[in-house]
Structure formats: structure tokens, C-alpha cells
Length: 345
Image (cartoon, rainbow, N blue to C red; front, side):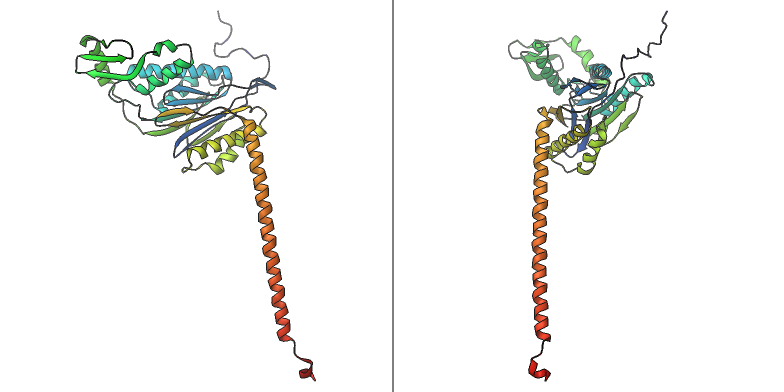
């Protein structure tokens, strides 16, 4: 017999202090997500190169904050569920649907030691979205790239992004080195039938940003920052996020917000990861050490000090010229008011 509740868990050997900085915001060019790379436990830095932003699907990213093990587990569970949904229904689950699914899966663990605070950043209705029950070529390409980076590289060798349908009886999939593979009508009819029955319902298109917590909380917004460094990141984002930002400006703003958070928060630091999500999918920027941002910030501070000094000198020169003009005007007035000595006798 079990003497302990399965959801209660085992007490850790020491107190865990969760600390991180993750952020994401929506602007005219899509969504920018950023996070630091420091993983800590109590007063120890466990890993300086942690990956806190994980691709969940071809159109969806997940930023993680909380317990590293819990975040990794639920990211894999959500990725599996989204892939199964895609295979069953022949279309992708929306960002809002993925957030609701994760919230419902986490809600039974409310009050336990499970600690997950995630943001889901994605785009609904991108160019790779298929509404005719076909295969999502954008998803295949994303999996091919992921496979090339991992150990499943050979599965995608020799294949092109080309799927053709010839008539109503055959389906031809062409490769680089192999001959066309033809399937019979009996094999292809159930696939087409499933595609017609499960035609996706078109919802709101465009970027989607959601916050999901391990207690089942689900919030939709255009700007979120999660973690121990989030108050410092908000101080930068609240005054800088605008809809008309360019991609370079948005990435620079996110990088600067993470830098300010790591400068004040001891549990955040090392490097910064940047992702940009558009209708074509997500793209990752090169990981950058926050020391470079520190040097850039010091250079910007020197420029601001020099600019204030020049402005002060210009104000002083204007004040000196104004005083000189006033002194000359007073001299002219005194000369006009002064009468000759002969007129006074």
C-alpha cells in the first residue's frame, strides 16, 4: 500500500530559490521573446548556459521559469500533445488552445511542489497553415531542422519539400535519389476522408501571447515578464515597447531589459537568448554574452553624460550672451538719461 500521496512528492534536501528572467512582447513585426541563461539552486549557479526558451511546435515557443525539471517535463508533454493533435486533426492547434490545454493539464497539481511559470508565444494562421487536410510543410521543415541538430538526422536525408497529388487515385512523394512512391486508392481514401471531416475552424489570425502558471492560471496579453528579475525588466519595457518598433529596435529593447534585470537580480545572468516569431515561424538570434551589453550600456552612459555636458555648456553660453546684451542695454539707457553739465547750471 502507498503510504504517501503520489502528488505530494518528496521534500528537497535544501530550500529551492527559483530565479530567472524571461520576457515577451507583441509589436508590429511579430513577437520577441528573450531570457537569460543562468540556472541556480539556492546560492549556487548550477548551469550558466541553460535553455529557457524551447520550441514546442513549428509556430509556437515556450519560455520557462520555475523548477527546471518540472519545466522540461511539461514542455515535452505539451510538445507531444500538440504533435498528436496535428496528426489526428490534420491542422495545428492555436496558441490559445495550447495555453488552455497546458492550463488544464497543470491544474490538478495546484498546491503541490510543481513549479512552472510559462509563456506561450506563437502565430496563428501563418503561411505554412494548411486548411485542406494536407501535410504542413512548414512543420516538416521545422522537424527536419530539429532532426539535423539531434540524433535523428538520417530520417530526413534525401527528401525535398515537395508533395504532389496526381488526380484522385495516386499520391506521389518525390525524393532526390529515389523513384516516386505510389500508394493505392484504398490507402489514400481514409486520409482524404479524415481531412474533410476534421477541417479546421478558422479563428483569429496573428500573434498570440499567453501566460500559464502551475496553479492553472491562464492570461492573455501583449507584454509579460516572468521570474525574479521581472520587476527590473518591466521598468525598461513599460517605457520602451511600442507597436511601431522595428525588428532591430525590438530585439535591442528586449536585450537591454534582460541586461537591467541581470544587473540587479543575482539569480539571473550570463547570456541572453532572443527569438523572433512571425507568420513564417520562429527564428533564433545568436546567443550573446551580457558582458557585451554591459560595455554598450557603459558607452551609452558616457554618451549621455557627454551630451548633458554639452547641453550645459550651451545653456551657459546662452546665459552669458543674454547677460551681455542686458548689460549693453542698461549702458545705453544710462547714456540717454544722463544730461550735460551745462544744462544743469
